[in-house]
Every structure is written in C-alpha cells, then in structure tokens.
Amino acid sequence: MPPPLELHLDDIVQTRKPHPCGGDTWRIVRLGAEIGIKCERCGRRVLLPRAEFERRIKRFVARGPAGPA
Ligand SMILES: [Zn+2]
Image (tube, rainbow, N blue to C red; front, top):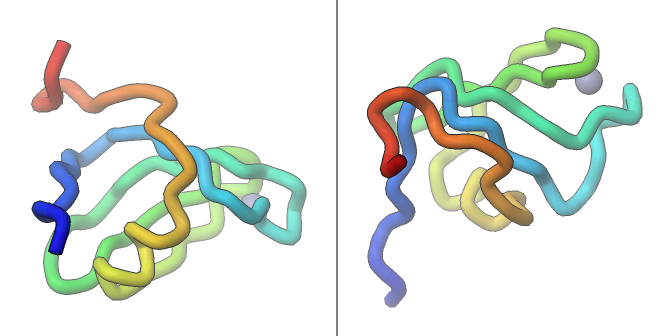
C-alpha cells in the first residue's frame, strides 16, 4: 500500500479525465473522509471518497499555503 497522499486545502490538482465542462483543474475545498473539490473552470463542487479522488489525480498544479514550498 502506498502511503496516503498529502492533501491540503487550496491545492490545485489536474485530473486524468476532464470535467464535462472542459476544465481539468480542481481546487481542494474540503478535507475529510470525503474530499471536496471545485472545478476551476465552471465552479462546480464535487465530493469524492478519498480513494476515488486519489485515483483521479494526474498531478498537482499548485500547492495550498500549508503545502510544501
Ligand atoms: Zn467544470
């Protein structure tokens, strides 16, 4: 098992599959058992179980203020 991914509020992530609106970057807006992400293009919020969210991530675009520099 890989270690859990470190996530912070306001991290920006790119997903493997784009949102139907065409956007593929998301801002993390909620942390917990479910991860809340907000589409940077259309502003839609989605809640995903953490494991599901981790599978969708392609890369980190930017880290939030609490993240590594
Ligand atoms: Zn969208």
